Amino acid sequence: QVQLVESGGGSVQAGGSLRLSCAASGYTFRDGCVAWFRQEPGKEREGVAFLNTGGTKTDYADSVKGRFTISQDNAENTLYLQMNALKPEDTAMYYCAAGGLYGGWYWSCRGPEADFNYWGQGTQVTVSS
Image (cartoon, rainbow, N blue to C red):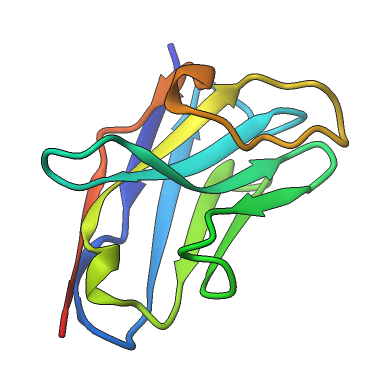
């Protein structure tokens, strides 16, 4: 059974940083698509960072490009999202996703939530101005 557990969320002032973690069990971050999504109340879930764990290709939403970095630690079987220069509009519940539609090492993993099979329970990020 696949289980993804996020941690690292919290409250921070604008300009600050947070690092989210996603620990996986029953799933190996190898040769596949993983991602971080976020969702504000009443809005659709939005993909913010995508990683092809085979070829290490990354993709980012324009709103976070240059500020967020997705990475993995294979030894710890953990996915990370480093978030810098946070803005109030980054406030949302953040979800780790895995088992995305995968087409090889050069595949772009950017895609909608329907492309991903496994999800964590989410961790709240609140950025105050």
